[in-house]
Image (tube, rainbow, N blue to C red; front, side):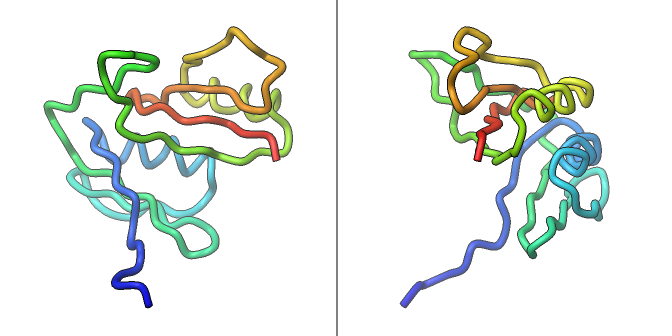
Length: 119
């Protein structure tokens, strides 16, 4: 028997509402909350939350001397189409060397790494 249930994944960032809006465009869902804590209620019942961290320093990727801490894997039907969409929303590519792989790595507007993964 499990001791707990996962409530939300929470990302520290300088502007919770802006980062929640970015992920709402990528994943769908509805944004609620304020400037200190914002929730993105995702289709299917999961929550991705964003917490204000004025001194936020984004992880470096790749960095053999520093941890990326975590990243999100987002499953997509069409890598090229999804890539155009996330770049238009403010993501930046972190790894453009091997376009033949089934995943591509980006940073969200606050610098957190995430992958688009072909399903």
